[in-house]
Image: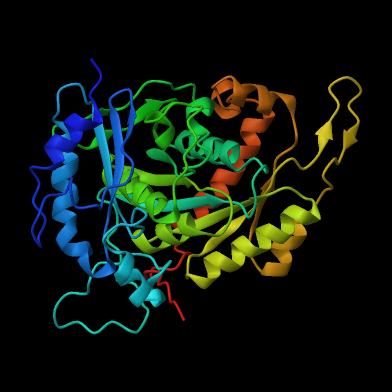
Length: 387
């Protein structure tokens, strides 16, 4: 029998808040999303409350996860209050805080620079974290991220792939995974393993046709938890498939973990390159090294006559790499095999590991690996400064 929201709220009433009262009746809860026993909700907090409310969040996640019939719980802290909630007046009194990322309070005695984020702790056991990003959607970023991760694994590396595209998760379809993940003894999510890599996506916790109507803070909280509350184990590289654009998700990742670098994916056409340029600028602004640019859908080769047609143009990403002073990692053609293998749940590197497309992805992976191993990426923790 499905667990009702009333049962969940009854459990949340047993959790006391630092200032008194219980969590369920505090007006802090977002809508509770229940997808086949997978529970997702957020707790609204003020920035100054983050440290104290983390204990409440952890207790809520643990206790809800222990309810019979519930297989997993994902609880986040958010800076957005439900309409009419108890923080409405305080929000009006402090408009300067609106839209800012929530940050833990600095430890006593410290004096961080104005606007600087605290230094991030890395993920235990994970050597490198790289973001695969694009300035706009529809350029094949997720397909590139999946095949890059598989190519890095083919080079002998232990690899994980995190689908951080909350609004449009593609990894479940790309890897043909429809089952829900399980939890280990420490209540951490155990990522799926497919084609030799570990895979995690919000798409494993919600149905494919579910619309993720979440505000930025909830997205930020979900990404943070998929980074830190998943049992990744020992990895050489964690590849993060970012949502398109230069918003909350990118800032959250740069703020929460020390990124080794970012890979920008673009098609050759001018409209895509404009947004790719913004992506490069964004990562530069938060001190995350750009490992290079990949030109996707570079040209189409007719399988019947062999004629090559540059449908989206050709060479634009290479020229953009030269203009912005970043490395050009390679070009990937617009090809039916890449599309059909991706739609079929077996990315082309796994479907045809000795084929020409797999070789192209592997050469890109070799350049990314060389950049990481040669120490070309910055070692300082990135900081976000809000002026």
